[in-house]
Image 1 (cartoon, rainbow, N blue to C red):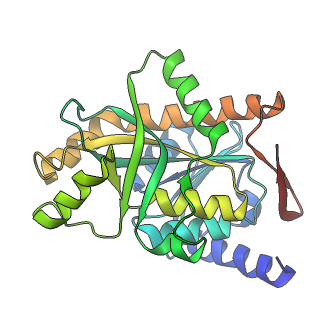
Image 2 (image 1 turned 120 degrees about the vertical axis):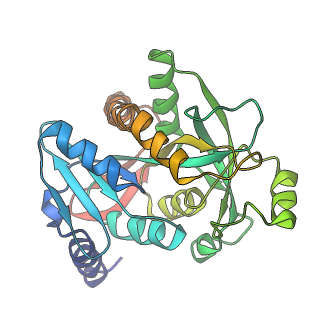
Length: 268
C-alpha cells in the first residue's frame, strides 16, 4: 500500500464522516443505523459528526468510535477500505438480519460464522471460491459476552444479497431456502472478505429484526425493533470490543497486529 493510497483513504474517510482521522479511537463499532449512533452519543455525552455519507461519534473514555455507513455492500466495502488505514485494534459490526428459521423470534441474536457471497461486491476482493468468514477472535468475544450475560443466541451463516425488496419474489425465496442459510442481510459477506483482504480485525453480532419468509417487515415493526432493542445491542457491542482487547492482550490467536504508522500487519 503506497503513501498516496493511505493519504487518499484517510481523506476520503474524513470527507465522508465529517471527522478528522485522528479523532477515531482504537476500537470501532460499525452499524447501518443512525439511531445507534444517536444512542451512543447521548448515553456517552459526546457529539455526533456527519459528513457526506457517514455519521460518527467518538468516546475517548471508553476508547470506542461508532460509524453508521448506511446500507448495502458498496458502502460496506468503502467503510472497510478506508478504515483499514487507521490503527483500529478491533471492530464489530452491529447489524440486523431477517431470520430464516421458524423457531427464531424478533429480538434474538444471530452470530454469523460465515456469509454466502451473493452480493457481488466481494468479488472485487477474492475469487468466488474464497469463503467469507468472520474473524474468529471477534466471534469468540461475541459468544463469550452473550454467554456471560446469559443471552440466548443462534449461530449460523447468512445470505448476503444486493437486493432489498425481495419478499414477494418467489424464485428468489426458493433459492434462499435452498441455501439453508440462517439469516439474510446485505453487508456481511462484503465486510468479512474486505476485512480479510485488508487485515482488519472485524466480527459481527446481528439482531433478528424480522422473519421475512413469514411476513414482510412493516414501518411499525421497524420502529418497535429500534425502540426495544437499540440500547442492548449497542451496549453488547461495546462490551464485546472490551473483551476482544483483553483477549488480544493475552495473545489469543486471531487478531491482526496493526502498526500505527502502516496498514501492514500480521496475524497470530
